[in-house]
Structures are given as structure tokens and as C-alpha cells.
Amino acid sequence: MRAVSGPQKHVVIIGGGPGGYESALVAAQLGARVTIVEDDGLGGAAVLTDCVPSKALIATSDFMSRFATAGRLGVGFEGTEEDQHAEANVDQVNHRIIDLAKAQSTDIRAQLESVGVQVRPGRGRLLGNGRVAADLSSGQTEEYDADVILVATGCKPRIMDTATPDGERILTWQQIYDLTELPDHLIVVGSGVTGAELAHAYLGLGCEVTLVSSRDRVLPGEDADAATVIENVFRRHGMKVLNRSRMQSVRREGDGVVVTLEDGREVTGSHALLAVGSVPQTKGIGLEEAGVELSKSGHIVVDRVSRTSAQGVYAAGDCTGVLPLASVAAMQGRIAMAHSLGDAVAPLNLRGVCANIFTDPEIATVGYSQADVEEGRIEARVVTLPLSTNPRAKMRNIRDGFVKLFTRPGSNTIIGGVVVAPQASELIYPIGLAVQNRLTVDQVANTFSVYPSMTGSIAEAARRLHSHDV
Image 1 (cartoon, rainbow, N blue to C red):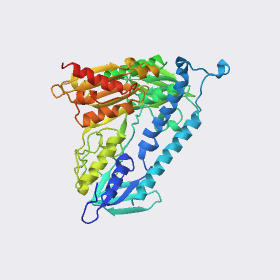
Image 2 (cartoon, helix red, strand yellow):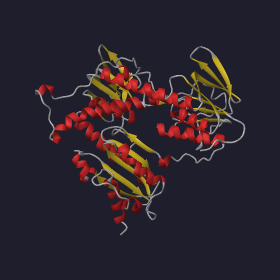
Image 3 (cartoon, helix red, strand yellow):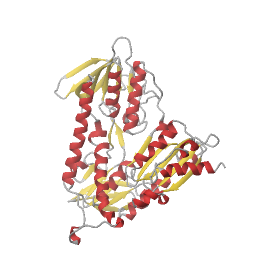
Image 4 (cartoon, rainbow, N blue to C red):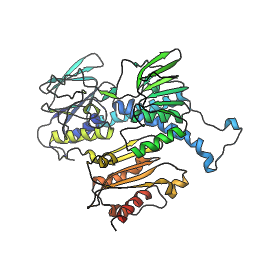
């Protein structure tokens, strides 16, 4: 990446999440003067209230689960039978998580300031004609002339009139870190990624958990084979999963909550966690007045280089509704800066995005999916290899999971993959490299893997795809 010649441009970024701070770093590297306006803290929801905290909570839960499975490996604990268990102190756990998130936010600020980015704490809004106002936390308002504007304001939890959070018993995923005691019985409403991950986390921490799913299975938008594995694991570990059960309302009742379903059934618990989607934070910041087109859902409409319908205005991240991943937000922001400042740029390629769901086991995906094949969007050959045959998985007492590869007939290039395994997020990368660089099954199959290793299953799946052509 090189600095772009010519008069120095001023880039103003509204929002300090991954889309905002990553674009600020790129713009500074390209020689621009950069101002970033953020009202909640650098890192945005991804660092402060969503991705980093939730994954830290899940990591704690997964650590505890090792105690529960230690006996299968021949490991016991000294002391009386009553002492042979682990307990989570949720107050300490949450304090650690919040401290970790704040430290990450501080590191981001230091990185931005080290390259000359001006950070202004406040709420940004568009004034039109290349001008931005920042209503600062000090009570003052500043206005800036901008050659390039990037909007990266993210999303917030969706709130329903019939299920209003109170921050004590009825909670959004941003409020759970205020808990000082573990819920006796947590009812999680919503079985998408956020709902499934947090249901898994609290189950592992020792809570009774009921998961309310309006669809036929949990994780309805994911690979069906993978989602089935996760739901079976949930049930085997004691979670109550209510499929085809749409929530009508949630109400506080004494020291507990009552979730009423549309068919009239009631589910009672100590706490309810609402994971029913999110809405973009695009209201009241002057977008429409500045000529920025919004979708019916309120998301900012962008093209593959992150341009909006307004001249000189770009957008990145969850507020665009493209794909709600921190990695995608960051890439959108980097692409926007490269395009606006005259550097080499390639349009966003969503087929190369590696995504992960942090349940146990995790689900990692990249490229085309089983649904794409079944619905005729792509022709592909598919091989699925269960992890139960992998020697390293046996050593680690891993019983659930698989590797699935998709290849294009004729060229034998790998066009997609699914990994269901502990730390699948680390195993999907070689498949992502294959998809991004159009590697063939033979190229993957002929690459040495460590023996024994979990990645050996990826190489073995590739070899099996080759054998189909012999």
C-alpha cells in the first residue's frame, strides 16, 4: 500500500467499529488526514458489547466443559466427591470480559493515534455537500469539510413492543455482562447465531437453558447437517430446545420471567435473553437528507466498492446489511478507502468470506453452501468426512463433527467448505485459501499435513474427491 500523490484529502469517518477504525488506518497509510467520530468507544459493538465479550464468555464456558469431560480421558480430581466440580463466578467472569473489551478498545485508540488519526468522542451526522457535524460528548458541536465520508454506525439489538428489556431479568445480548449471578433458568429467545452461541455459553456455565426457536431447527440459515449436529449436542447436554415455537411476548413476573408462545404455551424461567435480530443505526444522522439511499429495512445501500448513492459518501459494516461479520465490515472499509483515495482495489468478494459460529463444536464455513447446490445456484460434487475417523479427534475425545468440501465438476477447483469441530475457526483457513485462490482438490490433497492432526481430514476429503474421477 502506498501513499497517493496529490493534495491531501480529509476523510471523516462516523463510527469506530471494525469498518470505521480499519478504514481509518488505511486512509492514514494512504496519506489522508483522518477524523473519526465515535460515541460509544473505539471498537464499537464488536469489541465492547458483542463479538469480543461473547467469545470471551464462550471461551470461559468451554474451559469449564473440560472438567465435565475429564473423566473420559482417565483424569480425576482429588478430594471428596462434592469438591469434584467447577463453578463459574459470573461476577468475576463478567468483570474480566469487560476489562478485556476495554483493553482492546484502548489498544485500537493507541494504534489510530500513532498514525495521526484524530479521534473525536461524540455522535456524527451528515450535513450534505461534503460536510459532517460532530455532536461531542463535551456538549460542543464541531463541523468538518470532508473529501470522503465513511458511515460505519453498526446495528443495535432489535426490540419488540411485546418483549421490552428491563436490564435485570429481560436482557439483550448487550446487557448480559451486568449480571452478578448466574441465571437459574435462562430462556433464550431466538436460535440464530447469537441465540445459539449464548445458549451454549450459559449451558456450559451451569445454567438450565431453554432455547425458543421459531424454525424447524436451530441455526436455520446454516448448513443443515452442521445445524443438526449442534442441536443434537445441545439436547444431549441437557438443553431444552423448543422448535417451531414462536415467541409472542415476554413479561416480568416477580423474580422471574414468563415467555408466552403464539400457540398459547408459557415457559417460565429466572431470566430471558432476547436474540431476535438487530436493526441498523441509521436514523437521525442526516443520511436521507444527504441523498444516501436506504433499503426498506433501514440499511444503507452500497455497491461492491462500498459507495452509497451520494457523491463522496461510503458505508461499511452492519449498517449496510451486506453480511454481519466484523471481517466483512473491515474489508468494506478498506475497499472504500482504497477506491476513494485512488489506490488499487478489488470489489468485495463474499464467496471468499470465512465465517464461524462459536458453539461447541464450532461451525465454520466458506464459499458455496449445500443450499446453493440443492437450490441449483451452482453445480458441485460434495464429500463429507466425519471426524470420528480422525486419529487426533479420537485422542482429544471429539465425537461430533465433520469436514465437508464442495468442488466444481470439470475443473475440480474447491468452491466451498464446512468444518464442524472444536476450533473449526482455526481449521477453515486452509479451505478459505483454496477457495480464494481457486486451488484444485489435487493441489490440496498433495499438500503435506501433519500426522496426526485435525487438518488431516481436510486433505483426506480432497483425496476422496479426486478418487471420484478415477
